Length: 582
Image (cartoon, rainbow, N blue to C red; front, side, top):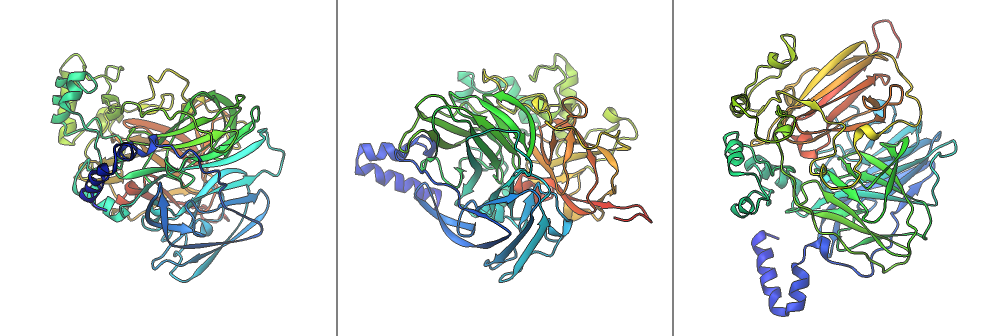
């Protein structure tokens, strides 16, 4: 339905009566389904699992649309496995195009990793491919398509792997909570609009009213940002103007509900399966204890809110003691909408849904240009203006920062900015969370429960720049898109490498490497949190140590689906030295 048709429908609906009209005009997250949906995810398990990929009509908050489904559902069925078993998963393609499944975060032979053109040819229409691999880990993971933009259409699902040894996390109930974003607009149309018009989905731009009310930037700051052709409200490429935010496949109005008995320890396994949405998660009135990150156990840390980037997983324990309902809030990072669910002792109970908070504004720190250390615009001299002028022209001498031997970013139309002063932001809360007044999880809070398996000093360092042009929607590594690169990033089998990712853009980039975990360089040595996905904040940098212990070719990419589609994708090649066996 076109935007004009939607407006006409709402206008005509107002003639049916004031009460009905007012209900329809509330945003979806504010409307209440008093009954709620107490519905478990469909589950498959055992030695032989069958999945079928196909087209389906799909209803979200009462509106029908199209989805790519797995066994007819969005998300696809929860796959339950046991550490130590052999997984055999037959995937049949009922689409009229190729498809695939990547087992996100699982350690397996690269031929089973599921990336067309890198580890296997893909699954042709009408064909069945059998994935077979040993299950060598436990925890919360997920799976999704690596073909085209099918992930945006609903092609994803959760995985829970039971540990072979006693679980160090005690709990009475266990729920998987899959967060995602759904659009009735076709993903190729979304991508086309992003290429045609910057900020096309941003309906929260600064206004004169915002200036006068003090909600937006001061006038002089607006002038400086305009010189750089930058928009401080451009936090998410795709927003609630086109997305409905889902929890376990249900929109806010559906009100998916999970039940508990007061006093129980409830484990919530959060998976961010969004295509483009980073979520801020909280349960007003309940503390959450984080016990797992990306499938691996961490020392428990109690928080009131956490940011979960695309493709990450976090397991938390809650223990509600009151006989009342609680609202689970998954607010989009730009606060253009939210996913909403209910935790309650009995079906039909609801709790107040908090309003959306004020949307965040990007700062000079998000450009890697915070020379004052305050994140503000006033740099007290001409130096800040000089750097801003250089940024506006899209040029920056890399030797100013890293010396003559600095890695060379290929400048061109695909590189809009180079961060002159990127900083490690792993100890900072996500955008918009620095002043919420309660405990927010940061990466530096995480500490591995088990000792790191490899504590060798890295033998070499590798620095990669995450580059882009937001106006042209071009994304790349070191200024080169995947289509322009002819060589893989080479690693020697079992070598230890320190990798530093520098974000030269104003957008977050959740970076995922296939087939490996890495040690994020926060926390005590030997207990660094081990992850497969890490968000690199705007204007920030992240370092981790990687042991290249999995021979083969592996994808390495931004998990913002349209960033990857636009070129922020590389292949990592792990090979033994000559004369060494694999």
